[in-house]
Image 1 (cartoon, helix red, strand yellow):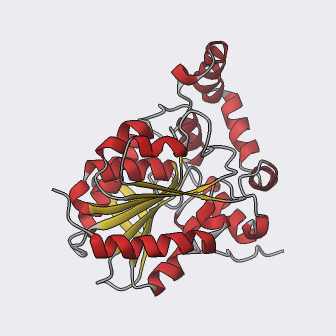
Image 2 (tube, helix red, strand yellow):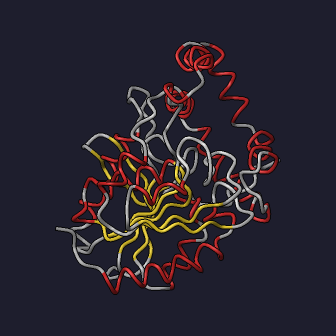
Length: 311
């Protein structure tokens, strides 16, 4: 039986980073529109913003989304040490490169680790950024040992540095990437509280890149990699307005508890605005896009009207 044609297009434009790596990105909207860069979370890609592209383009924005190095249709080199700082450098370089075409200030918006990367970029190149949006925000890329219970630290270290680097790592990846497992994580673990958008298209978006050469190495390296900077350490250095649209039932990065709760972010930055979205999980932009857009569009209009370049 012939295989069914893919539901989604994976490859779009190519950005050549450091004259070495091919980075996949998608861009739509008028060339003279105000630019917005969308940054996915762990295991996702440009198509996880399937609902943001049509709406933001219709509003006149120039909309970009990028596959981080190691994900989506971007290169997946096994020799790279993956970390938040690496992706922050990639995103900053990409914005600089595209600003020759679009000499305007950008809004950068990210989900999960994409949110953490967006904060880092906002602090690193403030002269290019007019606003930052967090669709929930990760507190780290991987476990932060000093914040774990003392007795758990050697267990986590053993898993990261020994188990995932041996034969069990391959078995872990192969089990993780099955359709049954990914669908179970999205539904049964509460990643999507409203499961209306957990469909064949979403599963293809998330699963297709796992068959690429290098995907296993990237997956295991990220799991075993450094945690990176905390959002609390970055927030005081962000000069632009920040909007957080945060699901109130996120099982992975809860807004009101855990190591890096979003309810405390305003203590570190007086331009931070938090909107909690009821009965919503870890990926609010995809789970409840209409609700996100109710808050996002007026906020974008407000900062566009009030924007003063960073000094």
